[in-house]
Image (cartoon, rainbow, N blue to C red; front, side):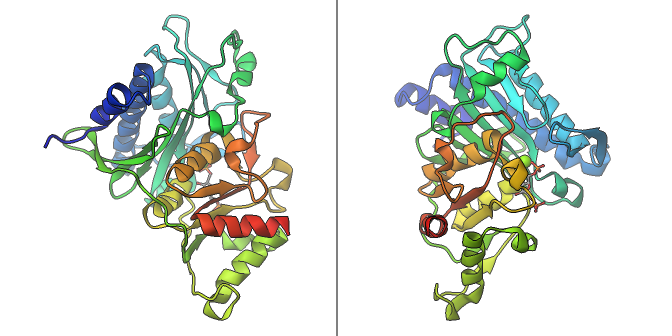
Length: 337
Ligand code: AHM
Ligand code: MG
C-alpha cells in the first residue's frame, strides 16, 4: 500500500471527508515544509553556525537565540506568498506580520512559536515549533499591524488547525484539523512527512507528572497540594507512586504525554503572576490544548478551560495544566475547593 504522506492525509481530509478546505490543506503543507527547513538547520548545529545568542531581545524581553530568529524567518518567508493567509503572528514579533501587498491574501491567520524550548537549543535536547490556525473575521481591519492584532483575539475553540513539530532523535509533526490527532514522521531521504500514527489517544489516568519543581515555593495552594500528594506516592492520599519528567521544552513534554499519558503543568505562581502566567495563550497554550482535547485529554488554567479564554492581547500569558483527563480534572477541582 502506498505510504500515507502528509499531503495524502490532507487530501483525504479535504476531498473525502470535507473536514478542511483546499486553502487550509495548502497552508498546513507550507508550514510542514518550513518545519522541515528548520529541522535541517537545527541538524547542522555547530557546523551551520546556528547555535548561540542572536544578540537581540524579543517583545517579551527574552534573549533571542540565532535559531529563534532563523526559524521565525523561515516560517514568515514560506507562508507569505501562497495566497492562503491574511496575516501571521509570532512569539518573536511584537506585532502581526501582514502579507505584503505584492502577494495575494487569503482567509486564514497563522500564529506560531517558531522555536519552543530555546534553553535546550545549545545543549542538544529536543525543541519544537508550535502553530495554530484561525479564520480571519470578515471585514477585519488589516490596514496596519497595530489594527490587525484585533483579528487574532479569538478563543481557542475557533482554531481550525493546530500542531507542533518536535525536533528530537526523529522529527515529528503532530497535527489536528479537529478530526483527531495524527502523527507524521519526517522521512529525511524522501523529504516528506509520513503518517505513523492516526487517532493518538491520551490515557485518562497517569502516574507521571511534569512541572518545574524548583518553583514549588511560588505555587498556589491547589497545585502545591496536588504535587505533594503525588510525591507522597503509595502512602499518600492518591495511593500510587508517581514518576516525574521535565524536559523544559513544552513540545517535548507534551509529546511524551501524547505518547504515553501524563500531566503537564506550568501553573500560576508568584514569580509570573503580574504577567498572567509563563506560557503564551495564542501560540503555546491554545494549540496544545486543542491537540490534547482532540486526543481525549483535558486542558485548563486550573480555573477555566483554556480553549474558552477570550484573549485581550496577542502575547497574553496563561497558567497551563494539561494531559490525562482524570488528573487534570482532579487538580482543577482542587482550585474550586
Ligand atoms: P520559550 O518559548 O521561550 O522557549 O519558553 C517556553 C518554555 C516551555 O517550552 C517550557 O515548558 C518552559 O518554557 C520552561 O520553563 P522553565 O525554564 O521554567 O523550565
Ligand atoms: Mg515557547
